[in-house]
Image (cartoon, rainbow, N blue to C red):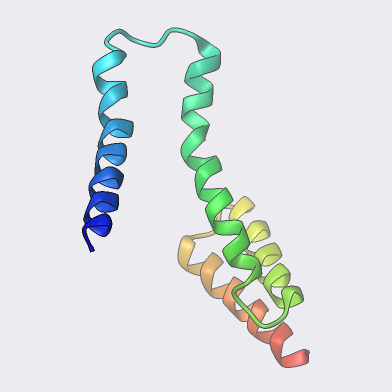
Length: 100
């Protein structure tokens, strides 16, 4: 049982260091355009990497997941609201599930 507490403590320390070290080590403004643009896109890339596999496994059939994803992409690129995108993507996935 004591190993569990050790693992939790280690995870807490690692999580803290990941967040605290950049604040303490990088004191001046980052002037490199490459690094600034890289850091700008990291949250979007991370979110996409975490979300995309979940989208493919959200339904019983991969085809319905892809249909919902395609509808969501089209509507999102056409700047529709979040509620519209989510509702239409769910509807498309549901219709494809009914057909399969």
